[in-house]
Length: 210
Image (cartoon, rainbow, N blue to C red; front, side, top):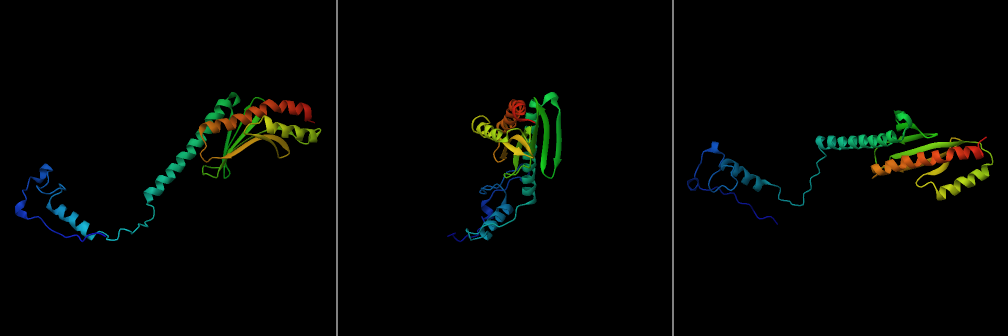
């Protein structure tokens, strides 16, 4: 319970005025603001909302909204920059194809004997970073044996990536959301797919290609 505030003014005779240009307040004035401002502070204290349980329901200010958008934009730039830094370190002859559409950012580059594709759908927590590389065209010879071999390799030697069938082609692929993704994870995701694809494409084509 807030005690009743009582307005009282100090006796003018008990105050010693100083030169207001000096920036000093009045003796007996703990606020250092002078008599008029001191009275305004007292009035503000008396007329403040007496209900301590009142909660502000004001909408976010325009400045808050702009700040939030700027943070999101910065995040987008950082993700794109990290991806391009990794690609630049891997791409043969530093040749990279770049594109952007409603589905996000796209990159394509050559690594060893394979082409590697990278897609970033956006920068929200639910958006994804996907990396893939094709290693064998289907149909292939002895597809039951090929399927068994790919499943065995998925279990033992593909790390965070895996073999899959995409658009009638065998691909090495890895995909994850960008929530809390770090530069090291971006680098590993792209590097693992490129390396696994480059190490296996020629052997798979020699054994199962038509």
